[in-house]
Length: 137
Image 1 (tube, one colour):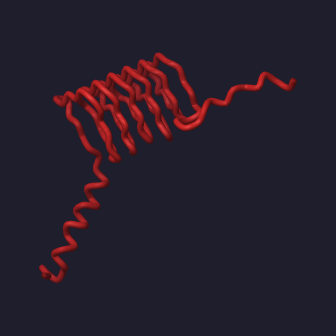
Image 2: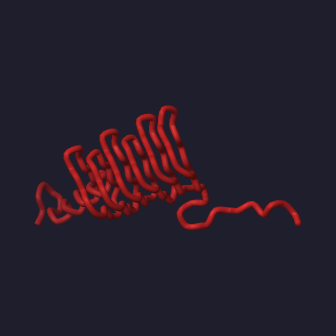
Image 3: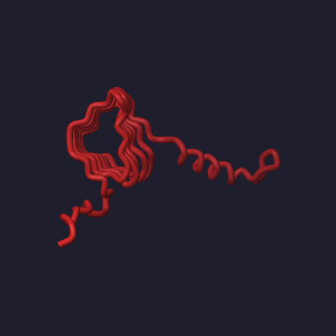
């Protein structure tokens, strides 16, 4: 069936591809107990107590709070995270961000004003840290 010269069946396909671009937003009144997983970008301005396993970027907004491990391709923190953060590409703690936990990522940015308490491993999420060999022996 055509509608104004276009195939009506092609319209839903265009709408579904547009959906892939927008991140999933969890607002300030949302509270999650348990695991959050998926292969979409996620922005959290609410509270999450549990584990995060996201295949794309995970952003903790200024009102967002996470208590648990975060694992994503990239992580941006403007709120408060208590737990280890593992990212395949990058972790960024913004000026309003607070992270109390260890970071494992090949790229790390900690902005002026950000708060961080933990250890850093820049080996990335898949490989062990390169230990110095202690010199030639």
